[in-house]
Amino acid sequence: MPQPASPDLKDFLRRLPKAELHLHIEGSLEPEQLFALAHRNGVPLAHASVEALRAAYAFHDLQSFLDIYYAGASVLRTELDFEELAMAYFARAAADGIVRAELFFDPQTHTIRGVPMGAVIEGLSRACRRAARKHGISADLILCFLRHLSEAEALQTLEDALPWRSHLIGVGLDSSERGHPPEKFARVFARAGELGLHRVAHAGEEGPPAYIESALDVLHAERIDHGVRCTESPELVRRLAAAGTPLTVCPLSNVKLCVFPDLASHNLPALLAAGLKVNLNSDDPAYFGGYLLDNWLGCFEALPLSRADAVTLARNSLEASFAPAAERQGWLAQLDIAATGR
Ligand code: ADE
Ligand code: ZN
Picture 1 (cartoon, rainbow, N blue to C red):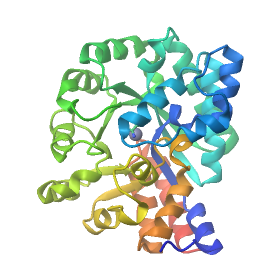
Picture 2 (picture 1 turned 180 degrees about the vertical axis):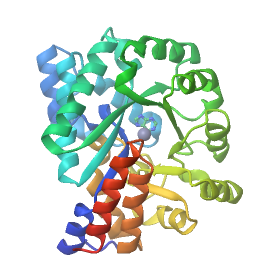
Picture 3 (picture 1 turned 90 degrees about the horizontal axis):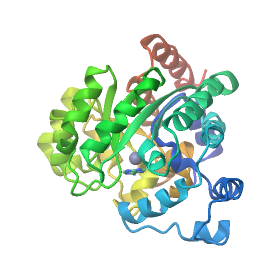
Picture 4 (picture 1 turned 45 degrees about the vertical axis):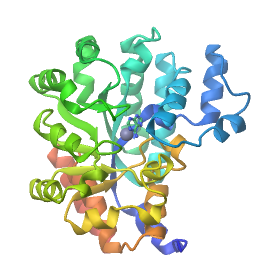
């Protein structure tokens, strides 16, 4: 039975400096803000109230979530909308002890509706700068390609984003995984590599271990987003452990999307025991029942995890970030202090 975390444990987990490396900014759009933006922008909604919308957040797989998530994102239209969205996330991130955030965003979800690329990137980018000043959070942007669309569309999206190249640290791959293997995006990831962008990819969330292998071999992904299905291949687990490949794991997401029936069944302890560089993330917190600290608390209440595991998870997140080495070293020193409770 899950045991509620003691106030002392909760405080310890909150104080650990953490990086959030797997957060879709569109997935932090809370129903209240969604309704406010719909009203401001005159966008019609399928649900009559905040309560009715929240009640619709009952998903049976990734696709059933994505359908609602893309509909929700349709209220985002202006640069200010994107800036306000990200500022709301940063306020919650600061409260959870996040010192570094690498935000995924899906430009194709917006440009397809006529929203200019510049409105998306400049709004988010301004919020990243404000987050540093207001909350002391270091933040950067990772542009994700929608894998249910074609590689040609992804290539065009990357070219369209080039005027804002300096606002991006990397590219990612998300949306419907099954039937859309990483190799479909070989050329666009090669182009991103030429541009000096970091590369990450969702793989092994619903898709098989072979998708994790091709994300590494074909896309040259530096981190695997989710990756929880790697445990179906002991050989792959050994490879990921030997290479120290980070896995950005999202426990509440995995339960909401029925990858695991409940948190107590999550394979996080097995991933840690195998020596994998796992870190915890919230994925789409407005849809999955909680932000980063909620994910930590849920795991520590449901699973056999120690304070030493907590420090490992926080360290893994900081080490896996794409922040400059000097910044990472600073946070790791803060972590050492927080870990000893001094
Ligand atoms: N886009 C937003 N959340 C996602 C997830 N969990 N998997 C794939 N694509 C996503
Ligand atoms: Zn994700």
